[in-house]
Image (cartoon, rainbow, N blue to C red; front, top):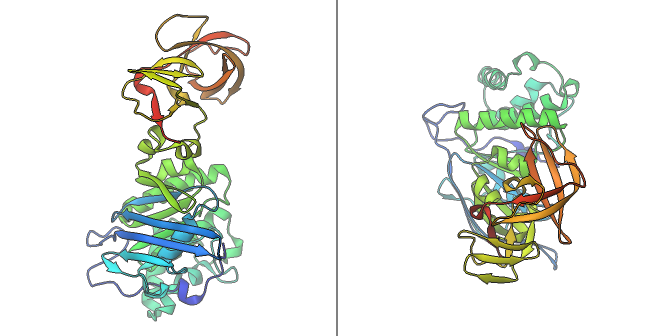
Length: 375
């Protein structure tokens, strides 16, 4: 996407009603978001959004999740006012903002590229939106000091941005978006350029900031783990269409269809070739399932499996051979062969003997852990 931003796009939102303040004040009112029938097409053949209907609750940490090209960034840019929908309506805080320009929306955006001014100091970057709003210098400085202390970077306010680390720059980008006290904060993959350790640290810090402020956050990512760690709810998109909306656990454990299952990292998907009551016939063999649903695909989550040494008879007991083992420290990932079909299993390493490659084992799964879904 194009991260070139005009001064109007960065400038602070319009004045909020008296009594609403930032940084966790009890008087603050978070804003809900309502999207109805949003369509967006680029050129003749590219459909970016195909009738999106979505409600984001006030004060929610909501994540738009999906692969590249699924429409999540386009949707975020429409929320920001940086892109216009071809059709549909958008309301923020109960007010229709479909045709409201970005600098008149109480929304700010944190971009993947930070979009900071490298030749300016941290203080000057943080004060930019406030200055555009015409705020007096003394008040502006006080607000900058307050937000810098809030994100624990108060000792860096007089440094140039190009002298800071990637993690520090990302915090400054977040602080610059927060200092103008928007009702909604949009975050476009803001952590994707960071190394794994710093990314995990900032995930926790970002979540703490959101909970402390009670602000509505809309977060875009293609990283499933990041979405599950940070979100109150997740919307999974593909081809401009919302595939599923729900809390992280629901989306992971009960995906709505095969696309969601595969995108959430599930490889154990098998066709159900026959049914007899609760008995399902699959390429793995016959399995007993409790309330698995009527879908034509069987999902077996790898962490629900257990491995017993040797061959052990029983219901939902499948003889297998270990063809691969990946040691991950806290857990091990197994590739198992069952009658020419492959099954993935994940086992905790704590207090157990780990099977070796070539070992014959018995795979067991509880009937209540089996889920069927549609393609």
